[in-house]
Image (cartoon, rainbow, N blue to C red; front, side, top):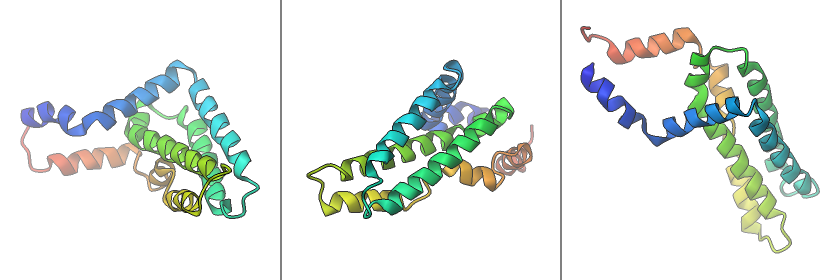
Length: 158
């Protein structure tokens, strides 16, 4: 257990640290950082609405953005432990949605090529909001976290 405790912070890596920093930033700004994110993505998608070729990507991004907003609204009522469990998936969701919005935005430029459009479509064909998918699967429930811990330390003597 001592070995695991010392290695865990290295094994978890940078994404865990950055993900917890995302939570800290959201809390420190009282959610205004998230509101700025939602506004920026929405504005980028408005410019792409006229493109029939980008419609599947725009639809996917709008659906994911809506789901993320709902998650963020209900997350405030959850325990800090639950938020910590979802931190990495939340950060990935923010990143995936924003990258999709940037790709769609780029594909609407005047000199955009068919490969720019294809790149946006391919990117937006994945699960853009893993925090919502994993939440629906019960991954952040306290009992799930306890079972995951038991699974890792099964058979170890304290």
